[in-house]
Image (cartoon, one colour):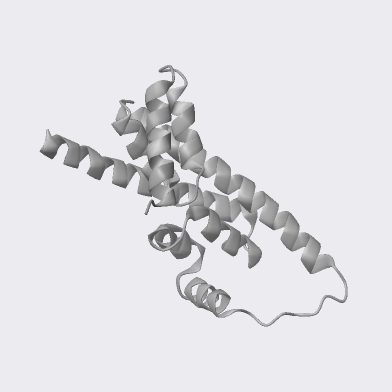
Length: 166
């Protein structure tokens, strides 16, 4: 049985190999915008596809961050529309929502942003933070730092493993 994420990664790897060199970073950026692939997975796709590691990491991180920014801005608008609507009945929070809010109160925006990729894609974490009322600029700033750190860290580890294997 095939795994959809694995199939998607293999599809991106094939696409990177099939397009001209100048277009390859755009494919890596597109992969970075996909939840569960993220900037770090996209960087690995680019490196395996033969792109210079720094370019692959930058392209993956930029693609991830652009997608997160779109999610944050959209979530912010939805939250504003919902909170300004009059007479909307309050819903009881779900168990998942309560778990997120407990983590948020314990670690704050920086902690949730930096540790979030261990559990959820950055797009989901960013939407959850924005929906709780954290300002879009704060969410995007902390998510940018998290994306940069995770992408750089995983890219460095991948390069080390490639060197060991060679």
